[in-house]
Length: 128
Image (cartoon, rainbow, N blue to C red; front, side, top):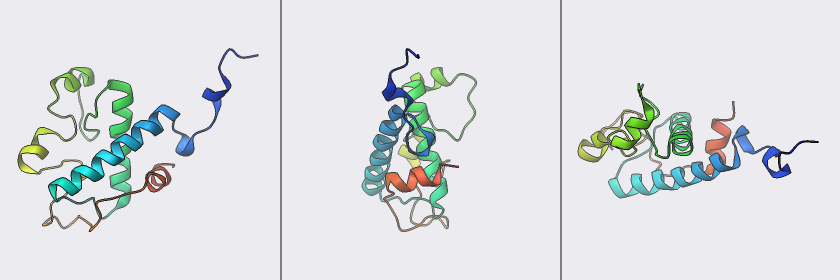
């Protein structure tokens, strides 16, 4: 018999842990609010949006901050503490430049007309 509580062995949608699922919802809501507040839009490929949101949630869980998932870091923990690449990163806040293509300006050819994405859609797009 295992010492592991039964609740921790339950499967979560998209193979994520319950904690990751909670963080994913927090990040998803943040992204929607931020896009609406800044007049930016998600990528025309919803898979890009979903993968970036999942990466941000994973970093939030593992590192304690929503570090940009689209960059390479020698020391992720140090980067989180410096906050430059924590979402929304400094280039996004200062110039509306999102390397991840999560927040796109109206003139960007890759943007769609959406500023929302459902949690179910994110999970479905990141399940594979």
